[in-house]
Image (tube, rainbow, N blue to C red; front, side, top):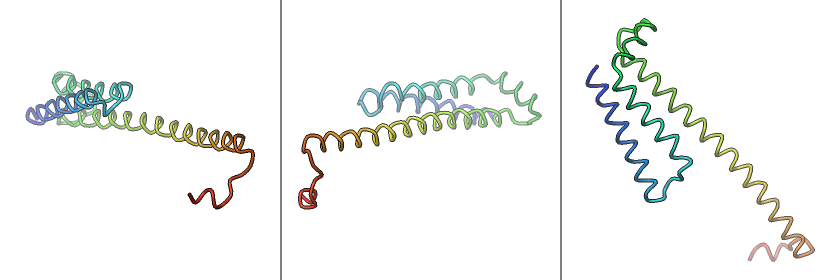
Length: 121
């Protein structure tokens, strides 16, 4: 079990470093990186808290303390994925609204609907 906890701690540090590198290179925005950094920090803290894992495993009547940790990791990452699904849905709605507004402005500027020949070019 100790080896699994060490691997999970190492993986969380790697995730943390990857997110920081993405921030530095402007591949990920700060507001989105907070979820990933928080998830990595939580996984690292839980993988180092052996006493808490033993207590949770005993409470759940599970023989292996790493099982609750893996379950908690699954819950944390499901929360992060759900949060990003909400963000993507919001962005899609905003994109549709923006496209409609641009079409209305184009119609107002031209004063007419575009002809089929104009849309081909």
